[in-house]
Image (cartoon, rainbow, N blue to C red; front, side):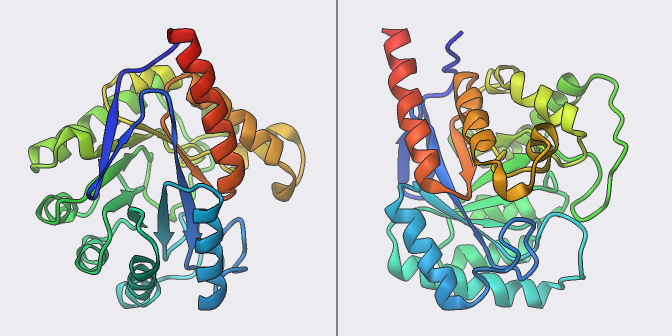
Length: 284
């Protein structure tokens, strides 16, 4: 089945046609302890080189995060601002692509918007009561992500009444809050939150059932790149799951995902373009 419930998404001054072609959101970690690159791009010149490579490889926009989602050392507001704001300034000076900040703090989003950010990517489900008003005032897009507890809180044995419907209800509620705050529907993105309060089987089920979320009427973001559920299912190391990430991207796009949050923009761009051709041909 070809799922095409949403035709476009607005990110800053850019409008993207996502009828068939998925966007690639290039991941840029401003953390010394990220789960994937373990601080490989912590040095600012390395960070900028990585950003340039993501854009060259086909990233449609960039996502900068200053605090990893998993447990770790405490990162206060001032430290997060020191990591994120200079990065956004430097990226805005260099690239004409939308910029996203991966933060659940409204103050970080506020200051990032002031220096050129276009999107607030919040994995907490808008836990900060000021988050949506800041986004609306700054005319920013937002990502509403499902999470069972809170970022950085271990959740090894999650329990749901009905996994897919519970995630759907949560995302409908959070998207509704964004609309009520004055954010246009074209600027609201939803994300199932794979690995966030989910076992590997739960994440796999949500990936396979992506059409149930895509049909809610908002652009659906897939954050499967190098995730824990993949290397556990494949019984291999985290740095040996490129094929699993690519397969997940193809499955997700076929089932309605239209944004790929990816470490490897080149691979993401290739699978997105290939799937766009396949889906357009099927629909013809």
